Amino acid sequence: MSAAQGEPPLFLSATHPCSYLPDQTASTLFIDPRFPVTPKLVGDLARQGFRRSGDLLYRPHCQDCQACVPVRIPVDRFAPSRAQRRAFARNEDLQVRARPAGFDAEHFVLFLRYQNARHPGGTMANLDPPGYMRSLVGRHADTTFYEFRAAGALAAVAVVDLLPDGLSAVYTFYDPSLAPRGLGTHAILWQVAEARRRGLPFLYLGYWVKGSAKMAYKTRFRPLEAYRDGLWSALAES
Image (tube, rainbow, N blue to C red; front, side):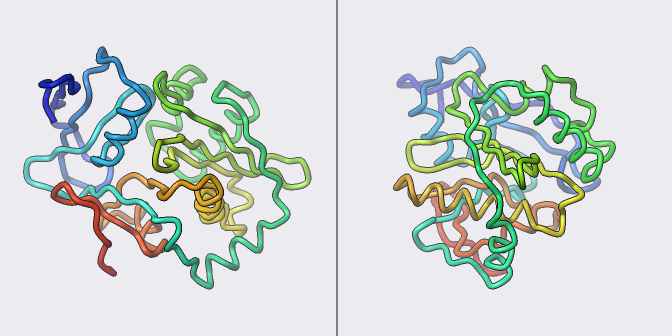
């Protein structure tokens, strides 16, 4: 992609420590933040393996490594495993409510509890309310915060972007004391069902990184498609 023919200018970041693989460096390709972004462009970029973090539209672009692989679930062909069916059944009591993409103090408290339990010391664990919003909400995205409540108590929040051809799972956080419920798995299964209900063919899951334990869960959702060499194709069993 280049700036010709109205396409957005691209910039390459300096190298920085890799977030996924120890002792590795990374660099990131990103869209010029000044470029006027439309919902159609966001969808086009998602189909080319880009992701969103706040207003930033980016894709890993490392000189000697292609470990970050964009993946998506083709919802009409997805079939949950036995373990996933059990996780969904454990959470049938949850009520789901759509909330607009704005700051909510209850959400933020849960977000911090999740970060401190699951990712202590991580960069997101120290976010203040403005930083939290800058990370999850973007000016050019059609974003919804889906609440999952158990007997009225907030159990999880899934931050989801609506794209022309699917949903994009931006981020999910949940009450760490409810980990046995499998809320992360349930949130993805719910998003698959929601995409199907809307008649959208894909749920975009971001990047899968072979060798990264925190990304391994994505390969449990089958079939899964990967974007490599400009094409989406089935991710081989691994």
